[in-house]
Length: 108
Image (cartoon, rainbow, N blue to C red; front, side):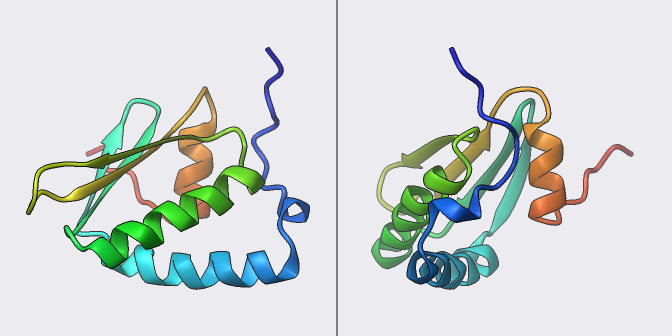
């Protein structure tokens, strides 16, 4: 199996897609209620909001193209439960996410 390098491929998105991706990220980033550290990445919890869920799904569709090394898991639980987006991957992905998403590790 071929492993993609752990590098964003901005050329995988058109200029319009990059603008849309940035707009979506600008909406979902501040909407995260909680960020949980996982062994291979992070889980982000969002409010149970159908519009926000669609935004997360659209963001993932674009993000998969520019970051094919990431593994995505979206959990849509029972009504009222948070929407969970898990971003994980192989060795090095967690450090990449910390840098790219400005996530501080809590190693205390």
